[in-house]
Structures are given as structure tokens and as C-alpha cells.
Image (cartoon, rainbow, N blue to C red):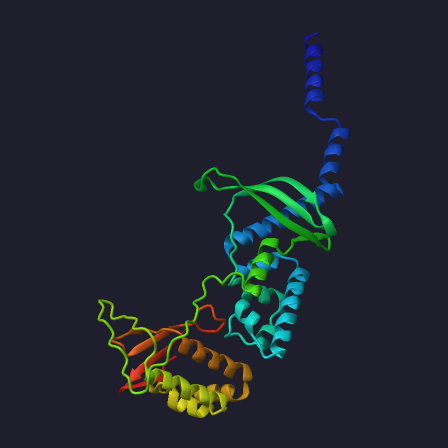
Length: 337
């Protein structure tokens, strides 16, 4: 009798603890259903976008956005800049990329690189997160889906859960983020001049000093750095001669007469010949060099080393360098770098 009772209890326990085959099959079917797979792909696309947004890396962000969206943006803005160039104007290009970036260079950019170059003038970012609590996926027009959720912060970031909305669109069998409407609105604001680009130093027009007047004396400072206002006449004359040589294609004269002797001494003969050749043959390079001189001429230098080194801030102007540096040698000004 005891053995029979034990056997009955064992059988009952096994029945209680093992789920029926039909239940297990239903669970597997639910997890493998098209809806569940689609939902996982949608969440993955949205989370990849949010992670790139939080990193502040424009190239990483471009990689999470569907390329056709970036290509449409590139084509629309390029068409406008090309029409503008046909009228010998450059206002939109200056607002979006800076005067220092030639249109020919912009035209060669891939959609992702076009967006990355443009993103320098946009404001974007998000909080880092541990995971996302997704609340809903709302269907929108054109197959777009709005993913609604809350960012769950890491333990060291407090407990505030920030709400987020990510627009995603189909991408083959997967999903990618759409170009955010917020960034589209910022681009439109820049293009039309409603707002000024962030992190861009504006070049201020200055009056040319009268011939023969000397530069104002720089006030001494503990760091040896001072700002003394508009460029002195000697520097303005340097800019004039350098621009004239570049416009005429006299690149050898530019490197021989306007570039600093220190630069020529530290640059090998082969490298110097290559620089002169590039200047002579590349229209876009000469355009950049002239733009840098014109922006510097309109700006205000910062002086170092008791006024013998002048630095013109050209950051955010689309140039491949952030500043134009001059140096004074034997009472003559030269372009140092």
C-alpha cells in the first residue's frame, strides 16, 4: 500500500510540473510568429538609432538612417545649391556648409558623408540608457511606424525615464530609422537663414586701416596673448598680395613670397613642389585658399608672442583647417600655416 501511494504521488507531481505539449507549442509559435519577429526588428532599429544619437557621432547616426532618406536630402539641397551657383551666388552653401567648402567637394560626398558634414551645424543628442521600455508601435503613413517608449537610465544616472519617439521605415526585411523631422526642421531653418549655425565664428566686417598708420599696441598679459582689434595695414597688404597671386595662378610666387620662411625651411623640396602643383591645377583648392584669406581679412586676429603671431579663427567655415596663422619675421608678416 505504501509503495502504491508513493507511485500515485509521483505521477501527480509529474503531471503538475510538466506543461502539456499543446501549451509549449503555442508559446513557440507566438515567439516565432511574423508579428513577434517584426516587433523585435523594429525595436532593434529604434534602439540602434537612439544609441547613435546619444553618442553624438554623426557618421554613426547616418548609419542607422535609411540611405534613401539621406539621398533625398542630399539631392534636394544639392539641386538648390547648384541653381544658386548658376546665379553666381553662394548664400545657401555658406549657411549649410560654410564658404570654405567648395560646391565641387560637396557634390562628391556620399549621402552618409553629406549628412555628417551637414550635422556639424545641427543640434542633436540624447541621454545614454541601459534599455528602452517600449510602450507602443503606432502605424503611420507610407509604411512608417512611430516607436514610443521610455529610456531606462543606468543606475548611476538617476531614475528619470525620458520619453522618446523614433520614426522607423521598412528596409528590406528589416527596419531603419527615418530622417528625424526635428533635424529636417533645423536644416530648413539654416537654409532659409531663420537661425544662425551653432559653433560657427562669424566673420565681422572691419574698416581698413589708413595707409601708413601703425598697428595699435597690444596690451601686455600674463599669458602673452592679446586681441587688439582690426588687422594692421601690413597684414591687410599681405592678404591682398596673397589673394592676387592665387587668383592669377601664380602659386610659386605665393609660396615663395607670402608663405613664411620658416614654413619653406621645414617643408621638403618635393612636398613644396607638390603643394605648388596642387594650387596650380585644382580650382577648388584655390577657391578654398582665397576664401580663407577673405574670411581672415574680415575677422579680428588674436595675438601671441608679444604681437608677433596673429591667429584668425576660421572654425565652422567649412575649411579643412580651423585657423589661419600669421607670423612676423624681421618686421614682415607671412602666412605661417
